[in-house]
Length: 141
Image (cartoon, rainbow, N blue to C red; front, side):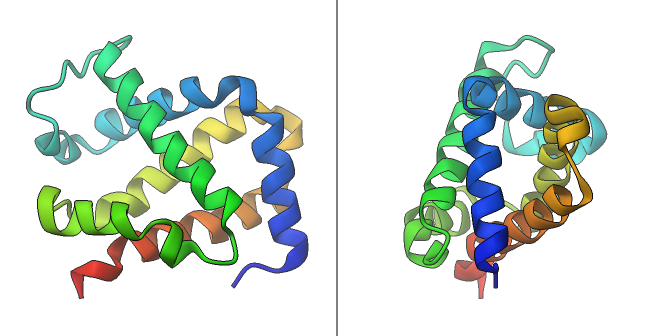
């Protein structure tokens, strides 16, 4: 899965963006809803406009889950097990949406990190977010 170098890079970048985590979550979700309109069907009760407090609050949850994942890079399945169950059994979210959100997170990270969003950072986060998406999809099988 992730090499020690990739794990270290992910943790360093995550610490670096700590003061922007809440914004990154909300911006990633807004970008998801705009870029992939069918994803809105899972949030019929949300105000999906720019600046929505509901998007911002849900973005905080997304970032909290990613923070848990960053802290548990060696055991993502266990760390995200409850979240996987929630999405598979209760919310019944199409697993494709995890990959789509991962792409949006990558774009937002690039915006916040600028030149520090190197090809190495991109590759490490792509691998990490793909692993998170796979773990969240485990309970669907």
